[in-house]
Length: 341
Length: 293
Image 1 (tube, chains in turn purple, blue):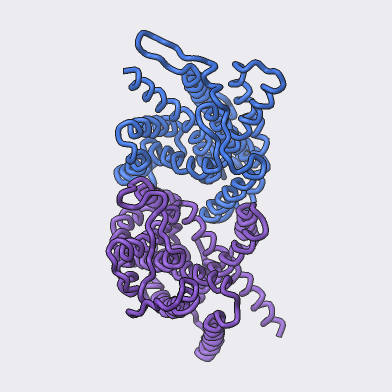
Image 2: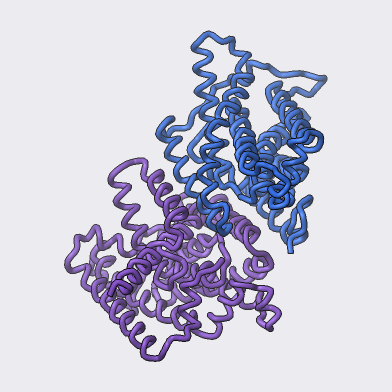
């Protein structure tokens, strides 16, 4: 699967001045976005602010997911498995073990997801394309049925409650649930998104990232050139699992409950939907996709009970007409504007 | 002992219906290399439409015992949507597999609400119509005749598909196109028309499968997404693209599910996925599929 946007990102032969100019523009845009997000809670209604939290969560999850999909070329239909692991990790740690430290929850859930991703990944990266997709779907559903059926362990179809975590030791018990979510928790997650986003940027622009792109473009050739294809695919798989788990933790804290439907294959499908909606060939595509999807879904749900239909139509339109997603359209418009000057 | 036989027959019945859907999946994948996530949606559509058809037919004065042919006909009639959907999928044939998969996922989303729009959010069923066919008692065994009829219908269809693929000219051309599309085109085969026919056939198999199942199970909005997983389990175990694989895979999944429900209910669907994973480890191409690189 060719994603020329990504190749251009990493292996450009443009002049130093151009690159500096491009990076400066990028930095300005990103900083503006961060500032806007930081200011958002003070100007918007609480309802819309609570929508941004899932957008943060999915944004982080999709950063990881796209490392596997956009950069390595592997389409997983089971990554909701890791999101669910994050959610249930938060639930088990807060409800059943009484451990409230958010940092601890993030770390433990993330590492658990990586631990689970090792056997799953070892198995899955032996295959490509459709078999990879089906295998990951099977693993995702395996976890779902485990969550669903083993009532005593997992709470069955109701799931497990997630209690409020403490951010850097402070539980903000003086704030009620909404105030906590749109206040300290919001900013914590924003910072988390920025930090994890920065880490992912470094990963993607490192030699490791270049290797992934090479594997995506032509895995045989890469192997011939000495790249250890399976190992790198596995590494990408593990990193994506970690990011998805972090997203899952945020989602679970936001909702207050971890439930098995988080692991269902259609939720994995939504992850892919969001990524393609935003644009898988662009670093920021998945982030844009997460925000657009959350807001689109929320608006559609308030307009009609047949919102799934319109979401489906949106996806169909994206796939047929705008395969490079929102960022692809934006990039096209930008280059049209520039060529006019 | 009766219980055991009932379970066995229940498993084979489920396998029969699964086979129909899986056969549709295999045909479409074999020729067009598309994995149709919406196969479950066709199945559910067949189920709902079957219920409506039978209710309509009964209200129009049809004797109750004739409901089986009505179900089959209603399933076949639904095949009319096949060409329309294939035309939609045609827009992205040249693209990467991921997009084809995503487009069929979009169909799943759309169909969920189409079903909701026409039939509402509550599960629907045909009551105990299946019992109208009564039970057959042989000694100490007693089986539901409806189940037997459906299994028989499935076998007939299986044999029919086999004969069709092996003996008829169209079947040969179909197999040739599945193996090498460009060559087929070069030799003058109207591939476009072939794609439409194959997809329609695959759709009909799915809708008939769904129609046949409604006397024994309720039609619900969960059907589309739930069936996909079982259908995929079948084609993975049997091997993508193989009809024989669809048959064997369906039997394995159907019987396993019946056994699991009886002995260890929690393990029911888990067992199927475990088998899928084991098969994928041991023999990634499935039991009858072509080996992948």
